[in-house]
View 1 (tube, rainbow, N blue to C red):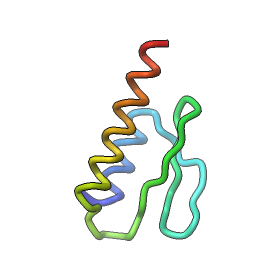
View 2 (view 1 turned 30 degrees about the vertical axis):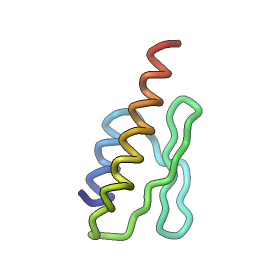
View 3 (view 1 turned 135 degrees about the vertical axis):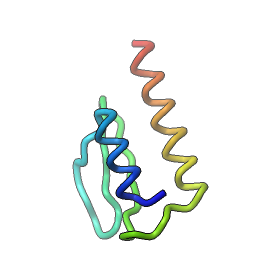
Length: 66
């Protein structure tokens, strides 16, 4: 999965891009932020995808409990 595909999914779920520095784009939602590496058409590493998925799921579950 490329960064563009991940970013499209994040934005569809309410995450917004707040800054970019070099090849990393920072996204935020409900006070939580995290970077997404964007190296063009290269696929993201499996571990990076897993980390993003865990962070988003954890953040969404915290927001639902409030």
